[in-house]
Image (tube, rainbow, N blue to C red):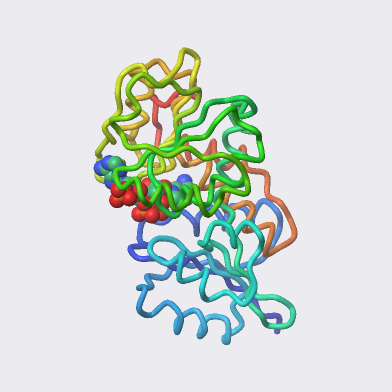
Length: 282
Ligand code: NDP
């Protein structure tokens, strides 16, 4: 009997994860037969549970909060982008049984911004709010697009400074605190803080977004997040949340595992239609 290839997303909490649904839609679309489940896994049990999963024949894992750094440590080999990100969201069992760690968050954001929404990054003044794991993962592909400049603002400035130092070989990264943003303007503001998850907004000044500029919240919800709302109120050309990024990073993980790249447009549309957000403008 042929055994179905098994995949899973590990995280805590995990019950609201859209990943099983997205990967089942990808499998259906591409004619792949896979099983994909969500498992509540704490940081303490991550290494043992992952080992058990792969020993039992599991083919790949997605890792989400709070496990991405632990997955980075767990992997036997890392891709260049995972090495730079110091965080792994995709683990893949290789032919020799070793585990490859990758980070598909950055390429997921890039595809959503540039392919799905036609936002030009070359020559843009980019501001990233927050200096956590997501910021680290998205900076390398953003810098590859040659923006005019890239600034990280964070409550704890030292965390932004460490990221800027670690990634200095890729390009110049400015860092500051929120009060220093007074008088500055940006073409693209990316919210990579976790503030939206508790319906909060970082302390943003008015006039921060230039005319024709765009806002993007990496977080997503069934209603417009506080930052998406801020973008709408400040007349952003696009004020988007991270659902597109979620689907795009999943598509890249699916490609790593199955060698087939799913088509994402219809799936993003389906998930958007289901949540029926009307005040996010595409
Ligand atoms: P981390 O916990 O690593 O970092 C959180 C950051 O948010 C820190 O810099 C923290 O600042 C800042 N922060 C938290 N609350 C506030 C606040 N009220 N005001 C200002 N700053 C705040 O999170 P991650 O980097 O892992 O994730 C960030 C966001 O990206 C989350 O919303 C996550 O859901 C989203 N994400 C979305 C993905 C997608 O596919 N759409 C993929 C990955 C992440 P400080 O350092 O000062 O504490």
